[in-house]
Length: 389
Image (cartoon, rainbow, N blue to C red):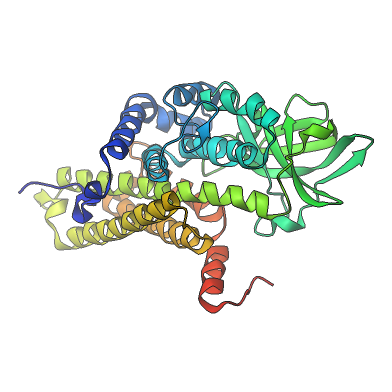
């Protein structure tokens, strides 16, 4: 009998336009040719040629691809989601590089910056010439970013920033950091060139997840910035949370890419592996596992595409994003764990991508809003009552 691809069970391709499929296929080829052959080594070494990759992905139009103007491609939200899906099917760290560049650092400048800030940074960031990072999370303030201790005080016409930020993707290779700080006017965003005196970025060592990604601590010690470094349209915590919604959207599609890669690996392995003189795929328990994984993958993809259509229509709400992020990361992580059981002991090696994806997804489960936070967002939408405090 003829095999079909897992997502053919829900005819996912039939829900996409020709342009969306073309963008997806372009990113898939790029990952196959440029990224996948090196992933095991990058993960094992805990290194990623991020600057080189950023310029190559910028050349493909992937950086800030859903933004308009300033050299950005201006694609649909679904097209951006499909690109994230393919990037994370390769590795979550690679997708994180693109997400942080386009949906956090670039989006913050695009949505809240001045014309001068946009013109200075966005064209170079779109090509990958300049790398950005997004400084919101602190060591003691992840799910509660409003409690941040990083502060910005006026000194004449200047601003002086002090504080630390933690778990910052791209931090130690960035040319510009969007840093959120507490001021007398509330939480505001600042565009901080990383060459500014008093700014340092230290790579976080010893990671067991997202090893093919740059993760850093930012330290700001009396960082003096001119008055025009502030993002003029940033007002309160809603501004960085708006950026996070952009990044979470990419995760809704991206996490399923990791899940899809695990499932496809398990299907291929089960077809080749013989146990008691017949393929592992011929056993009912194996087929049941594969069917359950395909079911969750298909449901998650239908949800992702629907959320993408809502975003393109301008009707997307916070609870939609929370539904997608919560469900699809959970589903991808469960697929990775189940796929590992089919591969047996081989599943724990870097010869196969499954354990690498599982490790990465543990981080994806936590960042851009933990499962607990997204449950409360959904609960608030259902009841009209906030349970955060």
